[in-house]
Length: 241
Image (cartoon, rainbow, N blue to C red; front, side, top):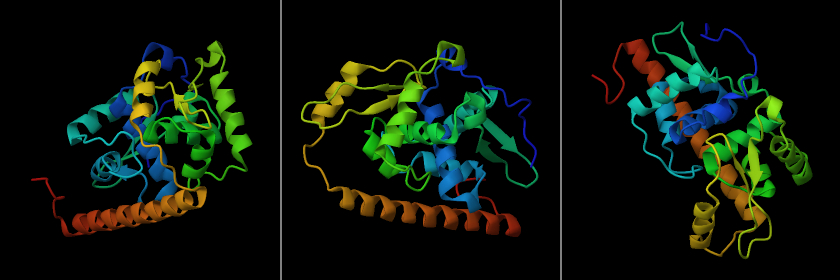
């Protein structure tokens, strides 16, 4: 597979000069997720990527991005060396280059990808939600990588995450990414106050997370098989002329 990447140099300074848009963050996070959860279907076609961006589960907020918006986001991410476009088949496929482009270790990239997809989370939630991406030893190790991202030097582009003030009634503080620019603390505080106060047990959350992940994996595999069949038969994709 060929790519348009000319260099793997870190480009952390881009985040101070040019924050990502919400759609760019969603596209990037989705590519990072699918690379680990459905490797047989990766790199992704545009149709599969759009479906992943607009999932109703494991996304906060839920979005409804049209093909044109996803293509525009891909073009912008390519200019930042965060996404590569491959050739060699009838359908163009896309993959992320986040770890090399931003200059962070694999574990940090996993945490940033999950924050882009699901919004602010505690270290415990991040460890649970990233279970299929990377198995962190414990919550302390998650905290360690988050603190490194928060203390990132200006020479490397500055902090990529921030620890939020403790929400009323919450036991743990949440973290959020800074890839889309500074955080609106007032908006986050208002959102947290509107959330319900009930909480599931850790075992229930683990079971639910695994069930959702299994379903997403099955759907992605079926979509890829259908697309490959359409290619072999010379048929257009649903919704295409």
